[in-house]
Figure 1: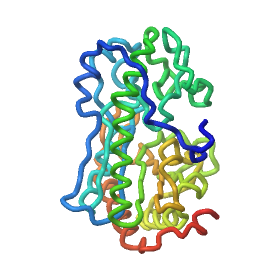
Figure 2: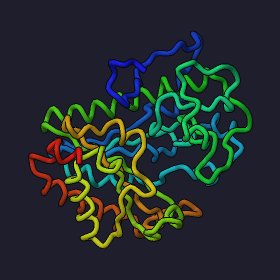
Figure 3: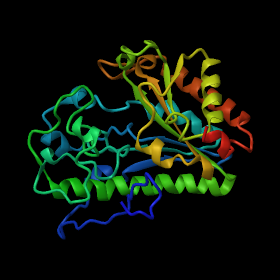
Length: 317
C-alpha cells in the first residue's frame, strides 16, 4: 500500500490492461449498469444506495451457471429498491445496481478475487486472501448466499477484469459523485446503504428476532447521533432494531464513512420475512406498508438531524 494513502483507502481507479478486442465492452443488458432515481430538487443531505438489488440476469451468465431460477437469486436483495423508492419523494436520490450480486459485488474491494475461479494468473495487486474470498463471496462471487457454487467451469481472467472495469468502477464513480455533490450542497452527506437479510441470519444471535440491523462499524462510519435517530424512528413504528450484529457494514460502509469530514455512512438490513416470501422470492402484501414505514422513519430523521450532525469528537467515541 502507498504509505501516503489514507489508511484503509482502497484504490478503485487503478487501470488494468484489457484485451484490445472486446465488443461489446459489457453485456448490453447492463447498459446502464445502475439507475439513479432523483427528486426534482434534492432537499435533504441523504443519498440512498441499493447495491445488491440488481435483478438483470444476462443469457450468457445463465448459460455459464450451474444454478437456475430462484437458486441463482439467493444472494439478491430482492425488492430493496422498491422498499426505498418512496424515499425519493423526501428529496434524496436513490442509486440501484442493475447487475445481480451473484455476477459482481460492489460491496467488496475492487479486486477481491478467488484464483480458483479463473483460468490464468490474476494480477499481482488482486487481494486473493481475504476472508470474503475464502468464503466464496469476493468481488466476483464463487457461491450464492446458501453456499451453492455458481459456475459450471472457470472464468477467464479477462472476463473478471472486464466486469470490474465496466461495472464496478462506473458504479463507484457515480456513487462518490452523488455523495460529494450532496456534501458540497449541504455541508455534509449521509449515505444510507440499503440491504436485506434472511430471517434465519439471526438464529444464533442473542436477539433471535430482529426486523432491522443497523451497521455503523461500531460507531466509526457515522455519528452515533445518526444511528440513534434512525433506531428511534424505526422503533417508534414498531420495528425491533439491533446494531452491528451480525452485520456491521461492508466495504461501502467502511470506505465511504468519514465522519470527521462530514460524510456519514450507515448500513441498514431489513428482514426479508417482513415483505417477501423467502422461498419463492415473491412480494408479500406487506411490502408497501414496510416501504411507507421506512419513508416515514427517514422523514423523521431528516427533520431531526440538525445542522451539526456529527461533531468529530462524538463520531470518534
